[in-house]
Length: 87
Image 1: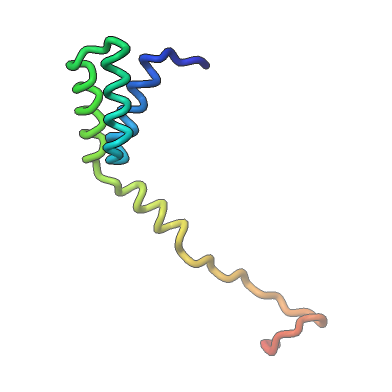
Image 2 (image 1 turned 180 degrees about the vertical axis):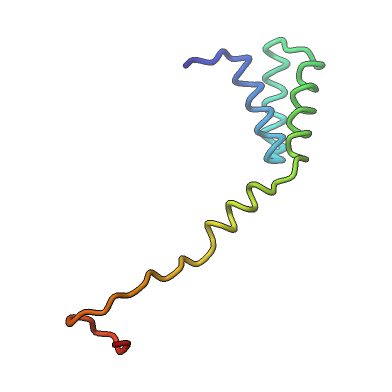
């Protein structure tokens, strides 16, 4: 898949807004204007990225909580070669 320069710079703007990366945003907006994108187009992308950023992150929180839980200990089967004291 190949993206044109317009799609790339709009993606860079969106990512910079999402990450609150002001230096990257300045660079991407400057590049977009140089490529001839209209200020209205740029503002629309910024507004969409900001709106997405405002969405609840409950799914992210849930996944991180799930990943960070300590794994449950597997049931331990004892055998003649087991070195534990739980026989």
